[in-house]
Length: 284
Image (cartoon, helix red, strand yellow):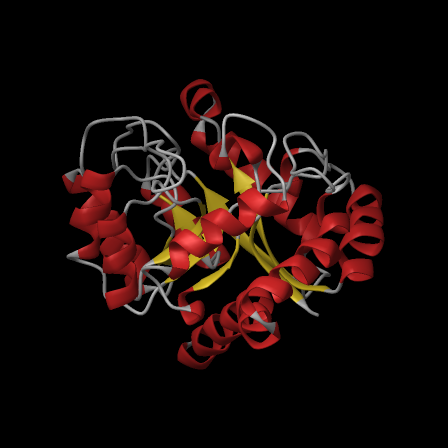
């Protein structure tokens, strides 16, 4: 069964074309990963300590590492570093599929999952600029206040690349029932994260992953769901059985097929993201 992943952090740890080629050959292609949203992550510390031009240069170098792989879809996790029109214009030219306005904390654009503020005036203006150029906003790291405010102004189905269910594990970084309902109404997308810290206070396994998926399916439909693994090429915090990232996917998919059936599992594993990408490409 083919796999699409709405969030992979491999650019955090793999820094050469050889490393990336080895990772893709061994762990993606061998496990039938056909699309992978590959994020460039800007930590709050990096956002604070580095000049935006320096960050932009590093971003371009990292995206250059994956440019030869059609399976890799560039995204940006935390665009809080944008502080002038030159940097913004370059981001618009690079045109990542999606960006998060912040990470887990408040910045000049929005309130993060563990912050308290909502969208700022700068954030609202930036959303309009990005969406007018076809760049999607990823709500994965917004707090609920910013999420609600964004849901009232966006012109797109709401896209959440990687998260979990707050009904199973009550942390601010997860989605609650109201947020799920808003995403469903918008005909949006939720990527189920496989990073253990978002699923439980212990290392997760297939049963816990299914518990979160089942919770989502109590509110959302299979057509709203996919995977946003948050894998990062190290195996740290991966579920039991996922020694190196996608190596555990065949076993997980077999387990999920036994729970929800082949058709729903196939839809969640790949078809929904492929449909989103087809719609995106047709609108360009």
